[in-house]
Amino acid sequence: DTGLAAKQCGVADKVSYISTGGGAFLHMMEGKKLPGVTALE
Image 1 (cartoon, rainbow, N blue to C red):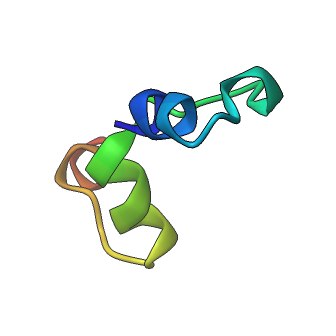
Image 2 (image 1 turned 180 degrees about the horizontal axis):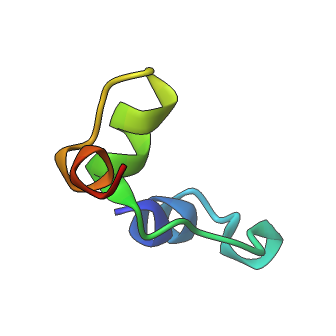
């Protein structure tokens, strides 16, 4: 989704990194617990 948005906005050449974490990354940034990480702790 991010790559497509960057292309549509004409800034794809300015983007050097796109996270593939998706929703899990957003949950982590919000301070929510991730079941997989919790299971490993």
